[in-house]
Image (cartoon, rainbow, N blue to C red; front, side, top):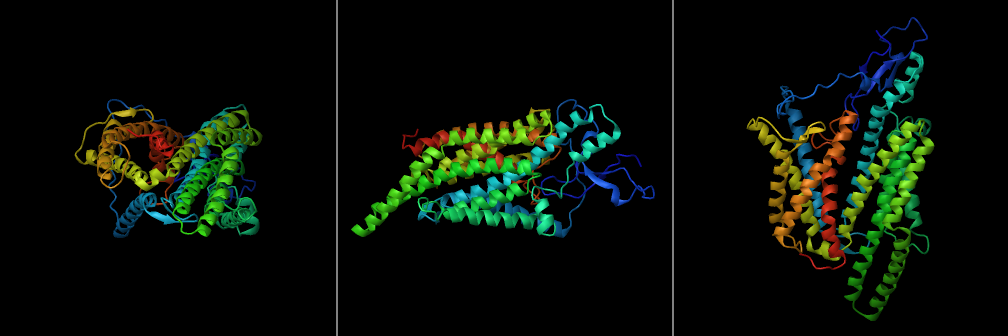
Length: 499
């Protein structure tokens, strides 16, 4: 057996099966150890550097370029597939209901009151997936620079081990081995619970008692938990920085919404005592809002987050090339996840938007476009459509004109259907036109995430269910469409006339 023989390891919820996850024999110190001894196997990413070259496609790409799957599913597998599909649809429907149904959480009954908590969980999970995606991209792009340097075979092997991918190792592994019998999940849960408790305790400090304690606790828990499960400590710090930017930006919005809701309730109160109580509470919330408007201003936070990311990577990176690469990827993650999610939070700021149900209609349009892309792809394969027109052939043939037309058709149809149940405060034809532009922008912008997955040699960012991929795979369309729709919701925030 050669020194760099490859052996696949097991699957990982984010890393997937193989694609760089391999075991490489080390130099055995005992000559009696056989080649198959597990004592000399170590994880490494060398497999990605020894892959076969992908030949250039010739001619028009076809829907049938992939080999057909002939394996029949068992009855249990079919039941599991149906269950996962229903669970995915239920999650999408739950987001729509969270944006439409009035909920009493912390500051009285509000339309879409549960939506910020859904945002907090989704952004945390997506940040965890993006961290592992960036880690794999780093190995794919940075390892060749190290391996092609002039060095001996033993030095090359040490470089491989130094930058190895180990699916059992994360930022909290050292603490887990010392205190939790090696269970990283348990260690991350304990530390996250302590962090959430400390964050909730700060809400009782005089002067900041108007903070939404439940939202602060949930955000602190999921943000800390996702960062502790990142590949290493520097990456965990970057994940925490990105999530902190999202949390502080959204916190300002939630406090503004709570103040607006309190003013409505106090105006409808009966008796001078009730009005005085609501007035004092409203004054406290407005004072806190003015404080956050200065300290938690989005653009200042963005600049601060960028500076912290750059400093973190500059201090912790082992090489100048690695430092530059990780800086670019971390900044892209901040803009891709945190900024887009913060824009989505602006929809929650206007009572006018929440009460009209327009936000629920927006989610219906987004999920309908996703459903349209899936149905269009399956339909064209069923009718044996002979070819496709990809937007970028060298990045992904799956992002093509045919699926774009299917997405647009379903999005426009969902717009007219949703207009019968919610009030967009705009002409329905204009909303349909905006939907077309948003779907087109999101379809093209997906190429960014697709290109990262292609570099990392994975097809999806997560594998929690048998369908749907990871949270980041489902959020990309939502975030990019939110950027297009945000100016029109922003007009409602300032009570400007709509078209």
